[in-house]
Length: 161
Image (cartoon, rainbow, N blue to C red):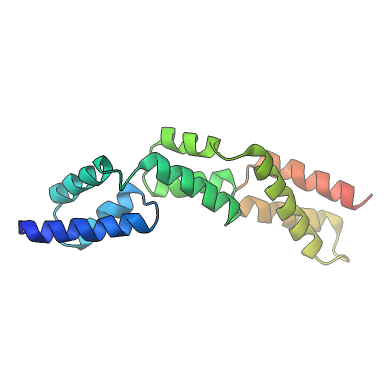
């Protein structure tokens, strides 16, 4: 089924507004175009036009996503990487985005999370159990296991001395 040209133009205007609201992944935009009744070819053509007109930019999306999810949602690199894969972003772009995260801020955020979680657990709880719960929490947030283990042990040692 082919759409009339004015319907395609309307879809483009709607999706341009959709892209202007915040950075979007190409998959998100394509899915949105398909909900407007466009077929695969039409959606792909409009997608390329949006990229050409700079409404859509994968690198810009990845960088914003990495920053926002890391510093607002307090996610670790593993969780951010997995979410970007769900958005069907290529590995090179993911690596570029993750490398844009400031290492010092990342470590400070991790230390803050460890401190907050460890201190929130009951003091009469066994120290090993407090460490384990803190470590599990940090892993669920998507941080690297070795880094999480090191930060938890460092904080717990300092807190208990």
